[in-house]
Length: 258
Image 1: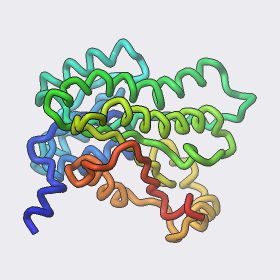
Image 2 (image 1 turned 30 degrees about the horizontal axis):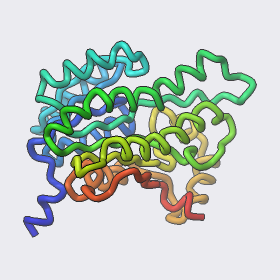
Image 3 (image 1 turned 135 degrees about the horizontal axis):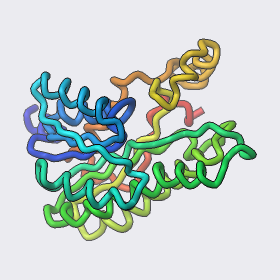
């Protein structure tokens, strides 16, 4: 039993999680801490980050934070360098920062389009590229991207977001092709959540009829809860998934299976 548990433990590992001040990113950061990792939370809102880190530390976990907008490529080098100075080079990268403008095709400005792709698609690649050399030296690393139902389905007012998340699914494959070869020990996978209550979906969760309709489109019959993220997060971040790379796991209660 202890040998099996060891597959899922992250003792001694260092994780960097973007978009970690709330929602999916924060849930995944807390999960990695509970599995034994030292975690660096990254987001733009310092007060939210500070509160999250204090809560983790009160529970006995090891966590720190860095403030930065990962959509700005000039910020990424600084974030990568600072992360190394905290706990050492990250072994695990979770690219959870994201934005969904929810605008119809005729409302999207070039600025919104570019910002959506910069945050959802461009930042994950360039941040990972900065951290991969240290993972290669160690012979082990885990990159986890956040895809979406819109990686494979078209939703109303989802043109920019859907394009970016479709790109994330393909980027995950491309990352695996680039960095998992030759027994490098690095894997690159993605989680595609169904409907979870986060900052991006909060307005939807205020509409009971809409939320029930979304739950009815799953097989399981409900929308996602934060606890549902924990198992797949630990799985993809741990040795348990060392032979899985380039994959997107749909954490959606069966939505995309129907």
